[in-house]
Amino acid sequence: MKKSGIKQFIFLFIILPSFVGGFSLFFTEIEANSKSNIAGNGEEAIDEILSNNHQNDRSDIVYKPIESTLNLSRISERVLDPLVNATNTIEYNLRTGEERVLSKQSSFSSTLPSIIEPFEGILDTNYGVEDTSEEKEEGLKSSYVWPPDDRQKITSTTDFPWRTICKLYIETRDSTYYIGSGAIIDEFHVLTVGHCVYIHGEGGWAAEIIVVPGKDDVNEPYGRAYASNLRAYTGWTVSEMIEHDWAVITLDRSIGNLTGWMGRQTEAPSNPVYTGTLHTAGYPGDLDFGESMYYDSDVGDRATLYNHWYWMDTFGGQSGSPVWRFDGVNQYILSINAYEYIGGFDANFGTRLNTDKFNQINTWLAEDNSTMPIDRPDLLDRGNYSAVSNTELIKGKTSFEIYCDIINEGTAAASSFDVSFYVSPNSVISSSDYFLGSITIENLDPYNYVTSYWSGVIPSEVPDGSYYIGWIIDSEQAIQEFNESNNVVLLDFPLVEIQSPLPPDYGGILITVFVIIGLISLVSIAMVVIVKRRHNRRIRENVYNVYEEQPQIWSNSEAIQSFEPHGFKFCTNCGYKRSLKTKFCVNCGNKLNT
Image (cartoon, rainbow, N blue to C red; front, side, top):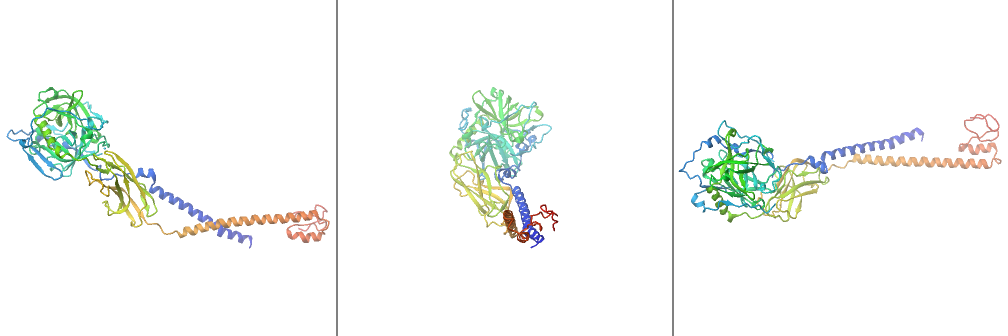
């Protein structure tokens, strides 16, 4: 084969396939890396696709201060009718929807002491708030802050007495949402104002009230309790009287055992406890969007039979905040914050715990002693801490992880339970969706959470498409909980894209074969060239050595005939070996034929 033919063969069948194969593999690697970065993996990907689940998250709800529901001009014009018994108890059961009115004779007990001592408990978790309170030119409104604003933010909300003060999330029957404040007064009761539980103009009794003790921004150290029963006076629910704007909430769990509660005290209106140094704390909507607890202290102004005035700063969202005195050892609630006069022309004021209301609280609490909630777990997703590692998944091939935090907001530990994970074509997660797998959590104490994750691949029976991811806590229903309706969790963003594996890439296989053949051929040719060169050199060296050692037995013609076929040239006159480029013999001077 000619040299040009050899060169063409090497280029077409060895160099070109090797170049094409290597080029294709290079860009295939680039594409794979690009897809990997888009899908995300590990902690970086988790940070990018963290998502709230909407089972325990209400961040899209706008909570307004409860004071915006008050028609304060109308309330200020109310005149107390002495012929109407405004102190009858009206009770509403949130679970059954049953309402009943109890006359004073059937609900009132004998007079009790004027002081109830505090209990510090057996222990030493983001909602936007819109301030829509309308100010009138004159009359009442919900609160006032006198300059300079000296309210102090409380960050140590797990200390006593701050952990006894609660933020209230209120949903009305008209599906509007409000915030208020309250104070725990025993194992499972909260003291607040009447307009936090019965909202005139918004359907009456609240549809739901969530109670969060010691809330500090997104931190809810004692979890949440839910109102099960509401009590107030008909003076508020029927007549909207500021003299009887107060209420007691019964909770579904004994959260007060953990937080404790402040004491309560009543005295004659002229007693100096009402004009001495006083304290209040709650969740004002004008600071930190109502997310944080704020405190203020100042002197009282005066007290009447039903109400109590004081110079502490308050704002919308603090309706229901306790007003208390501190005797150097203990805290005693005297009143419940509710109102103030426009422009600061008079002091803020609230509903005083007079003898009637003080005794009525004791009566209501005693009535509920026989129905004290049983301690149970309450398992739910912690919210804001859920994620999925990859969003582009190949069935049976791409491994991915689902991360979640499970919290126990109940008052008892949860024993072993399962968490089952699913993918769903819609936003409703159920056990009929495509099952991925499950994990087991062995034990979870009250007000503790555990970070857990599931890892695996998408089963082959799941059709291609876009899917939601979700999970069901206690999927085998092994745990009896306070609330069985909050165990289903939806990770509503991002959706995952599920695809079937691609068919075999025969083009890629062929390119790979070409690359391998090309590399083998290059190595083979190189070996052949090296071996041939070594062989030729060895022959030349042998012939030359023989000629040099025995020049006398060779004639010129014999040497020429024997060695010229092997690549040597000799002088025809003297037989001396010559260079191919020399024109004359260096030995005898004979002119040489080139």
